[in-house]
Length: 297
Image 1 (cartoon, helix red, strand yellow):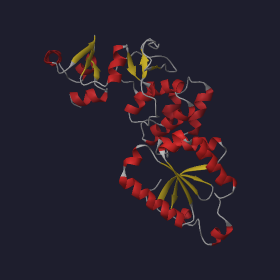
Image 2: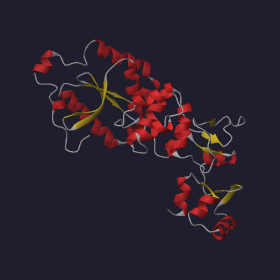
Image 3: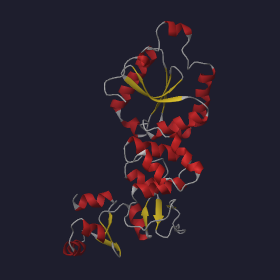
């Protein structure tokens, strides 16, 4: 990893110890500072094209942490969760209302980098995130293989039982945060929801009953024209096979959930999520009992 990559990995702010460990000599460090390529943030901390949040965190004696750090490390990030900072003293800077001071369960380790490691960030999220956010983020950690379930359980050992119990709700197969959110909400209503089900050679996000398919779009998904065409093609095929398809947009999941919940419950209460006898006699439902594609999970 070269210097530029190293700075990017820590949002543009490094300790002098990190630079020296990476092979930067004291002479190289002095020359870069004198040339203006790097800047001294405070004693022992150097910046190069820093992220504003990381720069502010380090200046306040802390690090980017919790949901913000986990997003930088590859996990899904719930909306409106920027500005999570952990300070070495475990306190929040009351003068800065834009940041959220976070404290981890299990002790507050020294701040040694501008961005916390995954374990420390997750231990902060155990205290800071709401249950739905925590499940969705933990789903993504497992799905993207950033950590194992055993590691998450170990990191949660000092959290209250009500928090640790949320790990029993995780689904590593969930492929997006919006999918996780919808699954958690529907199961809280007492609905049996299956995740990443195969219908023939196509896979769907969520399935209720025999034939009610729920597809959950992410915010980025909306801007992908190829994905838009592919999804509509799949929806058409599933409808032709007798399935019901409800495709939820990012906005509907986040901003219109009461209406979405009402409509989904109306479908279930009518029994439309089950195969009517006439469709079952016609062979509907055979597609999801067919052999999965080779290598499918």
